[in-house]
Image (cartoon, rainbow, N blue to C red; front, side, top):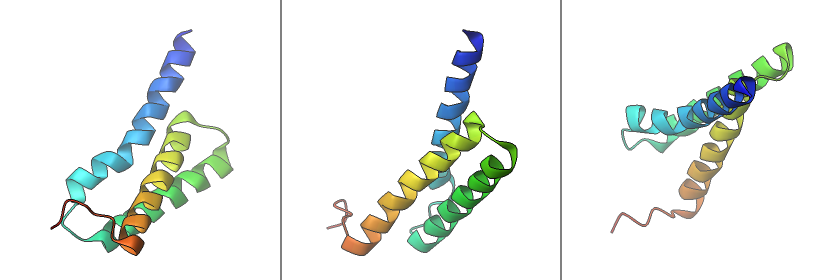
Length: 84
């Protein structure tokens, strides 16, 4: 049971790393965020390929892919509704 809880916690932490990086490195430069998420997804994908399944790497892979998709869609369709 403890192993399951630890696995869930590591996956949640991995999923939140891209979200935290937005708040730390956001300086109104979407290109930098897209490059950062690409780096996250490549590093976590290589780690999972070489070392097998890992909860933290899986959460980072899924989270960075999700944020990368959101940033690309915002950039392509200009969906930022907070700007007037």
